[in-house]
Length: 107
Length: 344
Image 1 (tube, rainbow over the protein chains, first blue to last red):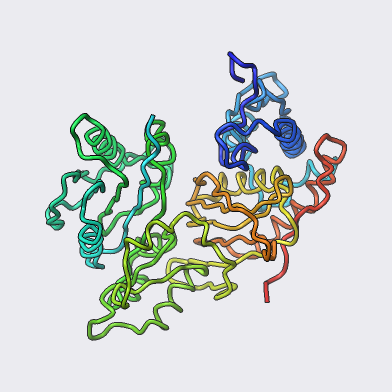
Image 2 (tube, chains in turn red, green):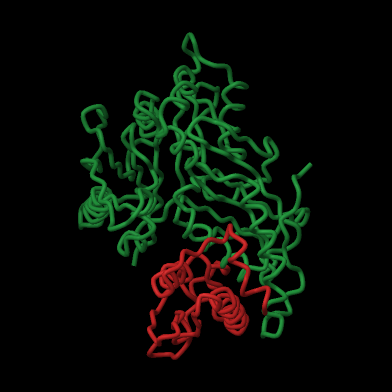
């Protein structure tokens, strides 16, 4: 979040909603960005729940991953989520395996 | 504040004719305003104000794969080039070209440009041109894995030496290249009217059309498989990005290239995505055309990863993802995407 204007950033990662707009400051539809972001965090939470991890928003920009022992890591971008999740859980995350969907099936 | 300088990478195997192509391009453009970075200074023979030699040096990051390696030499060379051009009295630079060495994997160069904080703000990657030798190219493809990587990463393939005895004909070359890159744009440097100067400015991804040449091709040398994956309906961007980022994290070292044209449900406008192994370029935005068929598609070029593994994974994920978060704000995106069967 910008400390001066208190506007949530639209993200710099290729997957961020801000990258869907060809504008330097894509804030006209910031509400859409935020709801899309909430959906993405919710999906991540479902996927990672079977590994004992919770996923929460962190300052409107990043994702906070916490394991059952309370250890946490901040993933600044979507690309960082998977490495943090593997570090905390000790499990490899592979979307080509059926296990990737386990959390979604029990949603 | 300066606009980022467009950067084009010219790659190709040893002796494929990269330097000749570059020299002709500089001659056509009068040479001014173009900064050039080369790895093999001895061969260039270019009379450029803005020429920097980068002694090829690949820095492997801890536990990193080749595609995430940093080309410190390229970062420094581009930095020197741009700083020199911007100094008072220096020659102004409108665009930059990197000519790789013949054995180079272009992936670390792309990683460096996309990830270096200074370069990200000062350089924008326009694309990669792969130079392909009409005489030796097909043999090199089977003998040298570097050539497969160079072809897979290229946005445009320029065939050289087609005037020499022993050169393969255009149809054969196009068919060979298309088995590795189904949507490859192939040019012949000996065709009348060929000009790199007219091709380079078009390399923004905006000329992407749905690849129709080849649905799938497998069983090449080095276990390369390439295929087109058509998608039905608009793409649920949050779900799609979760799946693709997980795929690139886990299997990026086996995905030589992923690219595609997608319609995101939340914007309705097409965008072009490009990725090389673990890395994705920022998406390129297009305006929707009135006669657009609104078909989304992806192209994968993989090494040791089968089409069905990726197709089934995406299909499974996109079937489960929307219902899993249906109770959340934004879940009203009605049109979700499913991987469709092969295109006609």
